[in-house]
Length: 472
Image (cartoon, rainbow, N blue to C red; front, side, top):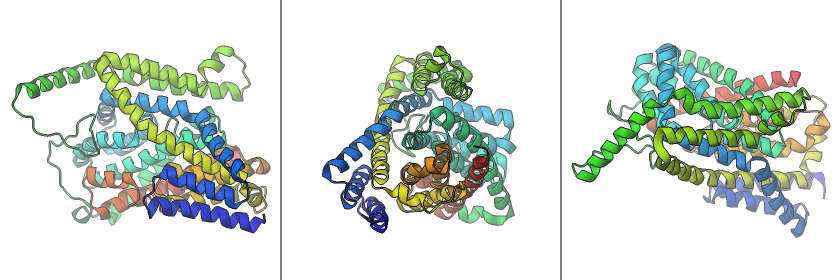
């Protein structure tokens, strides 16, 4: 088949997948598999080869990141149940003060809190941000809203164990230790610079409180620490014995949570990330030590973190609380795993169709052009579909086959794809609406704090990735 035909059919497959998901409301997993089937058959891979490629692509990425995603989500669920998020944000306020709260929150949410499912993290932290906004000043809501939007989205795609970073690393075969170190080097300056830029433009009149904010929350509004749905607010207790007993149990649980050291709650997660980083360093330095190789393996490191979090969680919320958190975590990880696997299937089919060889002829040995192209592809896909992880996986999968020929480290493609997938988060994104409603913004306000804010982070991240490409 000619190169032109392969390019056309690949474009049709991606466009059809987008239309199925956006226009016809087909489940993204089904849409991705249908797009993979069309691409394989239209590029003459044959029925058998197409099915094998789809299933192998799904299986390969599950081998790479399946357990990692599950372990990370379960750790985050236990930490959420233990009230660790609320306590960490309150600690940041007491240590750094209102002036620097947007920056300290941005760094914390984009790094240490990335094991927590993004919607849950947002629902828990939003009421805290609402209460703290007046302490920051007239631009408090705008600054905290954009800091949260930037940190949530950057963290999920750049920082291990964020599900987006795990998925993209799996597609490209990037060692998790390398992804952790490079992602950390990228995400911290990105969120700080983007938050600084947005704070500057807000103070110059970009934010109009009378038009961009809506005061729909009472002063004492505060969602439950483990809500059954986004934005669900606590109901007024009924004066009966069952409700009184539940209130007493809740008070006891809250007291137990306060007794558990915040550092102790996060210690297992921090230990697992440290072990992964040590594993990466020993590999780069070519240090051969069986113990370090074992505990530095990402699967073992995150398993150690999960076991430690479970033990600490029992002391904080009891065995029943841990079991409830694990049940919730399994529900959350299931949909993430399916979407990640289906994205791996499409990426594998794109590679098998020969797109990589064709694109390889369009680029010189320079790393700049491919990185900009993968950013643009991810940005366009995200604008259409609204999924950060899906757009990053698809864009990375398209250019992954040519990385060796260009001498380009796959981690740079992963980071560039992640940066592009952040561009123009808007009304197709569930996170957009959660940030708009839970932080008391109008749609106009959310377009400024979320869409513009995260897009600024996307462009800054691309620039930093290009700088990193000089040294990697």
